[in-house]
Image 1 (cartoon, rainbow, N blue to C red):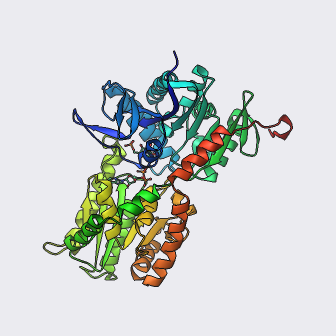
Image 2: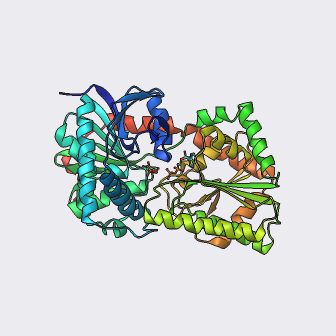
Image 3: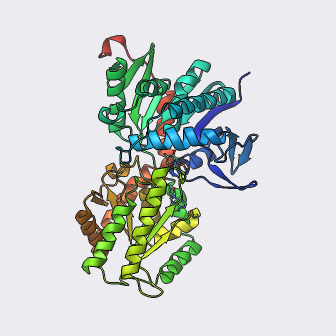
Amino acid sequence: MRGTSSFLIVANRLPVDRVGDKEWRRSPGGLVTAIAPVMQRRDGAWLGWTGAAGEELKPFDHEGMHLIPVPLSGLEVELYYEGFSNATLWPLYHDVVAKPTYSRVLWDAYRAVNDRFARAAADAAAPGAVVWVQDYQLQLVPAMLRKLRPDLKIGFFLHIPFPPAELFNQLPWRNEILEGLLGADLVGFQRPGGASNFVRLSRRLLGLQNHRNEILMEGRTVRAEAFPISVDFGELDQLVREPRVLRRAKEIRAELGDPEHVLLGVDRLDYTKGIGQRLKAFGELLDDGAIKPGEAVFVQVATPTRERVDEYRRLRNDIELRVGRINGEHGVIGRQPISYLHQSYSKEELAALYCAADVMVVTPLRDGMNLVAKEYVACRHDLRGALVLSEFAGAADELRQAFLVNPYDIDGLKRAMLAAMRATPHELARRMRSLRRRVATHNVDKWASDFLTALESGEGVAEEQLTA
Ligand code: ADP
Ligand code: G6P
C-alpha cells in the first residue's frame, strides 16, 4: 500500500521536541529554524524522531504541519544519534576539530536506523511524490528509499560542511556513505566547495563518470549543487517592529546596567562554535585595559545540546571555567562582564536580545552556514549593530560586509571586536544595509524553492559529455 503525502520531509528530528509526557517545545538548531516555515507554507508531512527514547506515537498535527514520528530505542539514541551521527560524522565533517570515533557497532546502528527511516518514508509517500531527506544523520536513506520506491523524486540536503578527500577518506564506510547519497536525484550542499568535494570523491572512490556537477550512477543522473540556506527574513523583520519586542530590548540593556557596549553570542553549546575563542579575546581586552570594567558586557547564550556526548561535556566544563575566571577577575558586586545563560529562549526573547546587542559575535571554527548571523541581520532594520563573523562559517560567503575574522587568531579577534565597538554609526549603517539586502533577497523561501525547482526539473546528461 502507498501513502498519501505528495511532499515529504525526512529529518532526524521533528520540529518539536518532547518535554515530559505531554509538552512540546521547538527543537534546537538551524535545520528546524529553516525547514519549519517552509513546511508551514506547503502541504506535506514531516517524518522524524520526537527527541525522546522508546516512544511510539501516532502521526499528529502541530502548528500547521503534519508530523509522523519515527521511534528510536534508548540504545539507538546512544549508538546512532550520540554515537555515529554526533561522535563520528559531526567532528569528521567539521574539519576534525574534535577527534572522530570510528566503531563498527556505531556504524551498524546507523545503518539500521537509516533503514527504518527509509521504510517509514516509503510507507508515507504517495506515488511519484517528492521526498526531501535532510542532513548527515540520514545519508543512507536516499539509496535505501530508491530501492523501495523507484517512482519517487528524491532530494537530499546536507546542512553541515562536506569535507575534502583528505578528511573524508578516514571514514571506514566512505563508499557506503557516497552510495547512500547517490540514491538521490539532487544532492544539495551549503557551499560550492562541498558539492565539488562530493563529485570528486564519487569519481575517485567509486570510479563514476561525471559531466561538471552531474554524476552518472547506474544509468541515472545525480546532480550536486550548492544552495545556501537562510532565515525567514520577513517574519523576523516584522517581529522586531513590535513595540513589546523593542520594550524588552531596552529592558535587557537596563538589566545589564546600561553599558556602552553589549556584545552577544547565541549558539548551541557546541565545540565547533568557537565560544572559548571569543571569550578568551573578550577576557584579554579586559586584561589589557582596552575595555574598562562596566564599559562592555558580553552576553553568551549557549543552548544545551548533545549533553551525553563526552566532547560536549568537556566543552561545557571548559566554558564555564573560563566564564567563572573572567567574571571573578573583572566583576564587581552585582555586575559581571560576562552574562552566561545555559538555556533555550523563545524566538521573541532572542529577537529582543539581537536588538539589544551592539556587536553580534559569531566565531565558529567551522560551520555549514550559521543562521544566527543571518537572524541578527534580519533583526537590525535600524541599521545599527555590527556583525563579527568567522570566515569559516558558510555565511561568510554572502555576508562580506561583516567584520570578518579568523577565530584561531585571538589578536585578530580582539582587533575586530574593538573595531566593531568603535565603528561610527555611518559605517555601521553602510555595512548593515548591504548585509540586509543580501539576506532579504536570499531568504529561506528562495532557498527551498531553488532546491525544489532544481529537483523537479532534473534532466539527464548525454553520454558524450561524460568524463571518467
Ligand atoms: P546550528 O544549526 O549548528 O545550531 P545555526 O546558527 O545555523 O547553528 O542555527 C541555530 C538556530 O538555533 C538559530 O535559529 C538560533 O536562533 C537557534 N538558537 C540558538 N541558541 C538558542 C537558544 N538559546 N534558544 C533558542 N534558540 C536558539
Ligand atoms: C545542526 C544540525 C541539525 C541538528 C541541529 C541540532 O543544525 O545540522 O541536523 O538537528 O544541529 O542538533 P540536535 O543534535 O539537537 O538535533
